[in-house]
Image 1: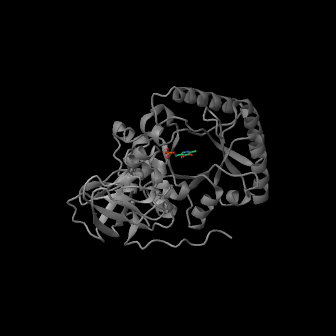
Image 2: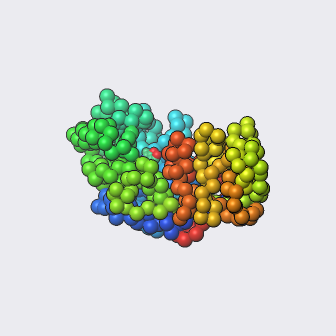
Image 3: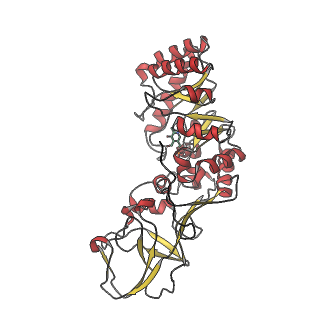
Length: 391
Ligand SMILES: Cc1ncc(COP(=O)(O)O)c(C=O)c1O
């Protein structure tokens, strides 16, 4: 049994507004920027919280020749919904069924000779040739074939290819610090990648496709683009490096998710009024508080709380910024609307992603995390409402 359908918040009360037209523009801009390399749009983790199927359809319509996901389960959902294009997945456990993904024409990442053996067996069971992408660890030390096993993996893959079990379509790897363009790991990883491709070719593999770049590298490292790039966060309009890389690359990106809610209540309070759990914030002067019906159960980080000594994140309300007052709770948080506020229950606040609102990167800075986490963690209880694009 899998999770039952989650009960959601009334979309009038709070929602994540997903602008698929913006997503489509971002995908087109990125495809143009990286050409002649092809673009894989990464739609794992429910398209970074934006909703996998609407984003996948929109990405295809905007010209993404590849989609990428982490798990075979995600890939299967795409196939079952009718996606027929090139589709790559790279993360599966020892006991996972690989027959179904091969039967569904899904390309698999392979990072170990033992894993290749499993793919070969699964290909035989599926009665198909499995398309594989061999992953070399160039320095992330996460997955990827350890360099000492690379020659074995390549020679096993060549043998499996000659036996008609697999087709090795690519060699690939992943950056550790592409969001820091000056980081010394970047040139070292590119050099290690070239060396691994050379060794694969020396082992008799053609390696028609090489892919290494994520969003940051696709934007800022032309020598890492090769034949294919795997772009996630930039397609969702969030800069991979705190608002700097896309602008430097001259690629306009628009936020795709706008997280908004109606105020549930407002109230005028006297100086000294303490607010929310732990009483970690108190009004210096008379002010007006607003109640926002989203909390950490919905992915609002508790680290965004506004405590006396540590200011929290802000929301946008009627063209102004209103800081979070006190601790973010499970379902709600309070904002300080200021002494002259005229807002009342039912008025709109934008948490992030609006034209004149904070960005996901602004929230990430306050919460000492990355924009990726801010958008991806928005919970299932928050309804997604779509506009534009291929829904
Ligand atoms: C293997 C792999 N490739 C590509 C991506 C896309 O990265 P980004 O969202 O930085 O473009 C990810 C995301 O984490 C990934 O794990």
